[in-house]
Image: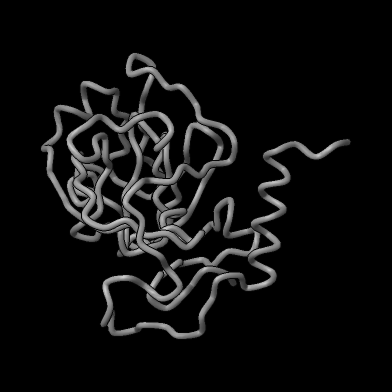
Length: 215
């Protein structure tokens, strides 16, 4: 069966992981520099995905938060907008070597979301699911970071489809593959469950300053 563009992309990125592509071997554990090692600064916003950009209308959109929580919930778009809204400025870093500084986000903080669902004792991991079938995993501790949010807007404009609109996660302390686009479900768990790229050779955490690009 012939390769599709999607399968070729996945194979290429798996090959990058096997070869350790882009790793400089010069970690910045003290965050002495704003730009993590091996990154280059851009002013545009490159588009990367699996070749699928789902069109999710606001009328059909919903977000489910469930798993090891006391109060599972599902938000429709009006429910989401009824939550306290915040603004946050952060840098983003893609594992494909680009970084973009001073992004202005608007949305709902992950800390507020967790306060609503109340994770159960022992909950330690968050598995993120997108409308495109993509998934990724982060620790509950990092998901609850002060600058982490469910973003619906970027630089004072609604998040467009190619960048994950209507809603994506933003976790600035990790490489951007952890910030799942077209967010559909947030699953709180006691045990970990590596996501799409994590089972294909990418690092389970993804800290840009210590170059956690690959396993």
